[in-house]
Amino acid sequence: MPLNDERPTSTSTVSSEDQNSDTESSERCDSLTLSSDVDCSRQSFTSDSSSKHNSPSCSPPKTLTLDEVMASARDLSNLSLAHEIVVNRNFHLEPPELPQNSLEKRVKDMVHKAFWDCLESELNDNPPEYDYAIKLLEEIRDILISFLNPGANRLRTQIMEVLDMDLIRQQADNNAVDIQGLASYIINTMGKFCAPVRDNEIKKLKENSGNVVTVFKEIFRVLDLMKMDMVNFTIQNLRPELQRQSVEYERAKFQSILEKTPNALNHTTEWIKGSIEEATRIMPPAKSSDSGQSGKSLPGPMLLLNVAYLRLLTWDKSNGPLPETLMTDEVRLQELQRSLQLYQAVASVLLIVYSSIGEAMSGLPALVERLKKMTAVLLEGMHSLDFNLTEALGNVSDQICCEVNKSLTERNFPALPAELQATLKGQICDITQRNNPIHTLVETRTQMYFKVVLASANSNSTPPPVPPGLGLIQPELMAMGLSFVNLVNYNKQVYSPFYVSILKNILLMDSTGATRQNGNKQGPPTSSLESK
Image 1: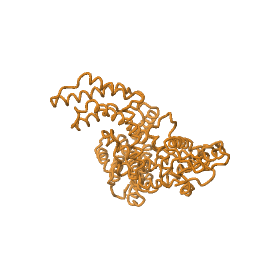
Image 2 (image 1 turned 90 degrees about the vertical axis):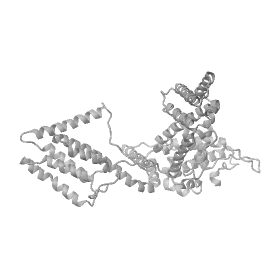
Image 3 (image 1 turned 60 degrees about the vertical axis):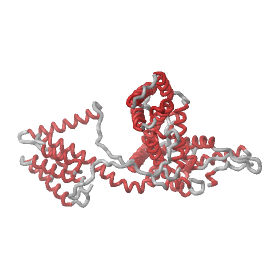
Image 4 (image 1 turned 45 degrees about the vertical axis):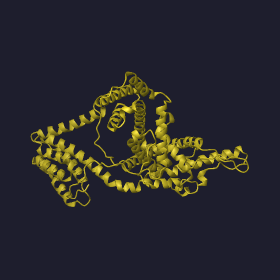
C-alpha cells in the first residue's frame, strides 16, 4: 500500500474476472510422451526416492516425524493460498467472524471486556493511572508504523516523536498525559493511511463524542479493518508476479509435499488407472499384425487425461477421494458439478415442456427464458441430501402450467387441458427415475460437449457450439465449459510431469506383465505414448 504521504486509490477487496488459462497448456499436453517429457519429469522427480512415491507399487511407507508433518502442512497451505490468488481474481480476505455463542468467541469477548474495564478503571482513578493506556498506545504506534513503506522516513519519525513511550511515561508520572490529544493525532494519522473505502469510518471516529475508552475501542476496530485492507492490497500487488511464476511455484511446492509424504499420489494413480481402463474400452481394436497377432492398443496421453478430467464432472464419494493434484480446485469442481447437475435438470424439464406443448411456446423467447429461470430457482440446492427433488419437480410443473396458461389467456387461447397438465407433471417428475430417456439424453450430450471443449485448442477463447437439444441452456453451458477448460489447462501445466511419471509406471508394469504372460515372445503393448 503506497503510504509515503499518499493515499491508496484501491479499495480493500479485489474484484475482477477469473483468470484465463494460457492456451499453451494444450501444446504442453501434446508433448506428454515417453520421450519428450523425460526432461520435464526430471524437474519434478530429481531422485529415485521421490519417483518411488508415485509408483503404483511402492515399498512400505516410512514413519513421519512431527516436523515433517508440520512442514507438509505448511507447504500445502502455501500451495492452496497461491493457487487461489492466481486462479480466483475475486479472492480477498475478510475479517474473521467467530460463530455466535462459540467458546472461542465467549473467551475472546471476556478477555477484551476485562482489558477495557481495567483501562477505564485506571483512567477514572484519582489521580489517573496510565499503565494500560501506555500499553495500548505502544501497540497502536507499532500498527501505524507497520502500514508505512520503507521510504516513509518523515512519517515514521513523526509517529515515533508523538508516540514516544519514554516521554509519555514521564508525563504519566506527572499526571500530564493528554489522552484526548493523542487519540486525535492517531485518528488523523489513520486518515492519511487508510484506503478511501474507510473514509466514513475515520469520519465517525472524528465525530465520536464518547469517553476515551469508547474512542480507543473504535480505533482498534478500524485498525483491524485497515490491516485487512493492507493484506488484500498486498495480494493484489503480488498477483501479477504469482501469475508469472505460478506453474513453477505450485509444481515445486507439490514436489516438496511429495518428498515428505509417502504415497502422496495414491489417489491420483487410481484416478489415472480408472481412466486408462475407461479410455481403453472406447478405443477401437488394434489391427492385426503381419504375424497374425494383435497388440493391445492404448489411447494417447491427451485422450487419457481428457477422459480422466471428464470423470471429475460426475465424481462422487463412491469414486473415493479426489486426486491429490486436484485438491486446490475441490471447491471449484464441486460448484461446477452442482451447476451442471442443476442445468441438466432444467434442460430436461424444458425439453419435456417443448415436446408436450411446443406450439403454445412458439415465438415467445421471453416466456421460455422466464420458465428456465423459474425452474432453476425452484431446483436450486438439488444436490443437498435433504432436498426433495420429486416434490420440487411437482412444484416446477405446477408453475410451468400456470405460466403457460397465463400466456395463452393473454393471447386469447384456451388453457391447457387438465389431462395434458397431468401428463406433463408426470413426465417432469419421472426425470428422477434411473435411465429416464430425456435426462439420459441430456447427460450424454452434455458429456459430449465437454469432450469437444477439452479437445478444441481455442476453447478458452471461443467455446464450441452446444449439441442439439441443449440450446435452451447454451449460455450457462458455454460458461461452464469455459470455466472447466481453464481449470483443466492450468492443472495440466502444473502437474503434467507427475501425470507422465504415473503413466510411465503403469505402462511399464503392464508391459512387464504382458511379457511374462507371453514367455518373452511378444513385445510390450503398443502405446501412442511411444508412437507420438
